[in-house]
Image (cartoon, rainbow, N blue to C red; front, side, top):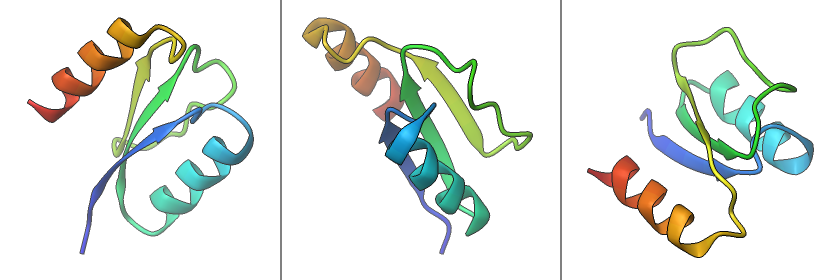
Length: 68
C-alpha cells in the first residue's frame, strides 16, 4: 500500500535517510525543510516544501495546506 508521509528535516540527517527509505519502498514523501539544496531526488513522489519549523504559524499554515 502506497502512503503519503510528511517528513520534517527531509533535506539532511535522519530526515533525509527516512525520506530516501520511504521513496525506495514506493511511498510519496512531503518533505519539510528550510532548504532543499542538499536533497533533490529525481522522483515525482517527492514533494519539497520549504518551511521554518521554528515558526509556529508558518508550520501550522503549511500542515493545513498539505492536508487540504
